[in-house]
Image (cartoon, rainbow, N blue to C red):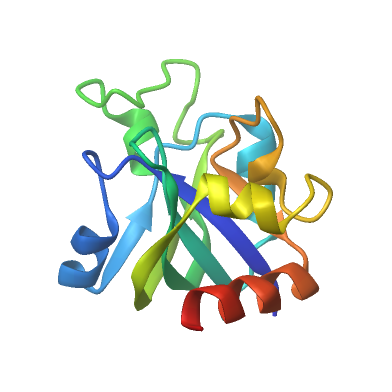
Length: 151
């Protein structure tokens, strides 16, 4: 099992949305490095849900990867802000994954708290200027994060 950190703006799709729906299709990824991280995911992996572009940003929940390597339907929808005219059904560029809500933490672990607890090599989200929406989380870091969030 691997661990990931996945960012979403709470006004677009927040932990409360996932909690209410139970599962979601994590689509709209339009960065090749983030897409490649998502392609590395396996069912059973866990992902920390991170609220981004909000004050304060931080980790708010935990998700489980239940399906991977799904074709992202938004790339073919001209009405979608994630439409990609260069992507064709016979050779899609973008994938997505299906995730299930596992837990909403009782309190957010803010980016500032994460910066106090981890070095950039331990948790990529604390690196200044990091804008990737999907990041791997090393096992030891994930265990510490879970302890901080549950403790």
